[in-house]
Image 1 (cartoon, rainbow, N blue to C red):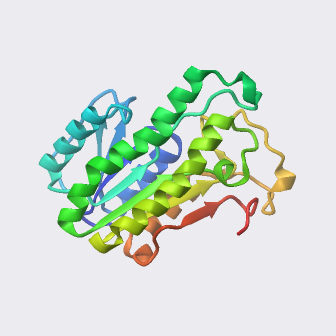
Image 2 (tube, helix red, strand yellow):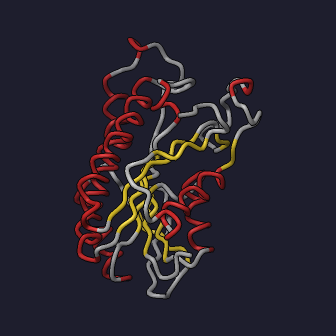
Length: 239
C-alpha cells in the first residue's frame, strides 16, 4: 500500500507514533522514526522497513540536517506525520499555567510541526507528491476535557494550520490533513480517567486505531482528501 514511499514519523518511539511506524513498515514504506528518544541511529540504504534518526523538532537547523540525511539515504520525502507533542499540567487552572509551560508546549506542538513542514515541503514539491498528516486532538475541537489550556490551544491551532497548508499546496500534489484522537490508551494518557459515558462506543481506543487512520490518509485511498480532520474518538465529537 505504501511500497517504496519514504515516510517520516516524528515522535515515533512510543504510543501512537510507534504504532504508525510499525503499520507503515508493514505496508512496505521506508519509514523513519524521528525522535529525541532515539538511542541508536540507523539510516541504511535498504528498501523498506523502519529506521531511526535523532530529531529535535524545535530546532529548525537540526530538522533541516536530519531531513537532509534522510533524503541523502533514500532520495526523497513522500510522507510526513507530525506526531511529536507534549502535554503538561492536566486540569490545571488557567491562571496557574506558567509562561515556561506555554513556551515549551507551543515550541513542540506548533513550531515543531511547522519546522518539519517547512523543511519537507520543497522535497515534496520537487516530486509533485506529498502527504502531510498532523496530529491534532479532540481537545482542540471541543475545548479540552483533561488537557491543559496550552495543549488545547496548540491542538486547535493545528486544525487551522492544516487547512492553510492544504489550500496552498494542493496545486503541488501535496495533501495535508489532521487526525484528532479521542481517549486513546498510550503511556502519556494511561493515568487519565475520562468519563466513558461520554463515549458512544463505551471504551477507549488504541494506538493502532490512529495508525489505521494515518495509513488511509498516507495511501492512495486518501488521495482526494485534503484540508480535513479525521475524528477517531468513539463518537465523543460528531460533526
